[in-house]
Length: 527
Ligand SMILES: Cc1cc2nc3c(=O)[nH]c(=O)nc-3n(C[C@H](O)[C@H](O)[C@H](O)COP(=O)(O)OP(=O)(O)OC[C@H]3O[C@@H](n4cnc5c(N)ncnc54)[C@H](O)[C@@H]3O)c2cc1C
Image (cartoon, rainbow, N blue to C red; front, side):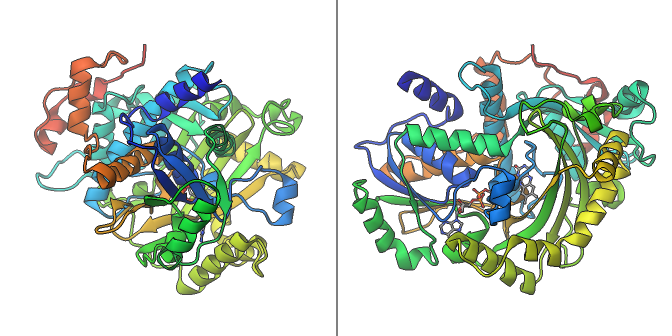
């Protein structure tokens, strides 16, 4: 058992490749995907970890929803692993975006190993599927202006080049990607304006199952969870230390703050702001995972494709010529819509999404809601918030999905017509001005790991590892820089035999990229 646990930790946190001296006590605040992953990475490095959190992930069932015990944001997530920027939009900060590339790839590599070793990771809720991204304009425009930014093309080329991302196909000029589906079932894609797309393999995470798995690992590691709602970490730091000591865990030498959107008040970081969003889960089995097919939906043509493939129309397809950064700086009431249709385990299809900056009123309501729900006795209920702020957006989100893919339209219509049970999950993405905060706060023993926006699951393992490296920096001055793309390439050339990889020519400029015809034919697969 112990051996299995150690192997699991070695695989998930392969980049946590050092040991602290002397089993230092470290407190992690928050038990979302960021907090649990960080706690496990620190434990792997030999720390004595204690988690302090207002709430933990909950079992997803009607009884809990009826009680008002609502899943934390990490469970609400879709969750599709995505190369940055995510379909719900970019973080508006170039450095943060650069760092995010390393965090996502680090997470992907761990998840790939999870999928390949089911004997070590049975039923943990992670699957690897082809994921398609569809656009209403050409990703590589006919004319390329030197010096002009082309974020969508640049994202696609980064994916094409990345040695760890398998199954890349570009639609190019031959409409290969779209034909693939239209040939199977014309007109499978019903939005006739779609003219381009690309796809690659990506991890789909059933976050209820994955969060449960992470929690079971922390239990096996003997990491206790102290239930506590923190109002102001700085004011309560000594008290939190005392609570950890009272558990017999020693005095914490470092604290890692992973409180998601609530870091706004917990870490006194006014840059943290919520962008709200929602996802519908439409079951196609009876009684959840492992259940028999629902007879009402079993005959929907091509439903199987939805069960084994992710389909997205990102925010950036709305921008002229795909030259703008992919997230508009929204005013409240000016949401960005995107289509997000992904399989969840073997039981449901997730339909999302939208992303909307929220006004002061709702922010207050929502923060109050979160604060109060953390105390479990608040006056606000999730239903009030949902009715007041989400109804119109959810309607628009559903319409967008219905006009995108025929099987989705059929699935939603059958659910409606037959009155089948489906679940709407709403949540606040923890965005932050200037991007994610992952750093050792100067002059303190506090590491911050929050503000992951719409990508916290995709970045979770990479960020956990990097938080651990910051604690190491604090304790003994060593710090390993994050694996930047260049280093990943180097690593591959030196010793990685995991993938068949045809290197592209050395790329200099956007113009070079455009004229590099090989790109259109690039298609890699894992062996
Ligand atoms: C609709 C939607 C769809 C999404 N889809 C995706 C996706 O497809 N892919 C992806 O990668 N990401 C997705 N995300 C984003 C992702 O969910 C978040 O980035 C991620 O969950 C953040 O994780 P976290 O651990 O930082 O925060 P949380 O999950 O919010 O966890 C915070 C933890 O801190 C605790 N806490 C909070 N306040 C306090 C307090 N005052 N005192 C003590 N403890 C406290 C909470 O109880 C909780 O345990 C989506 C988000 C939404 C809303």
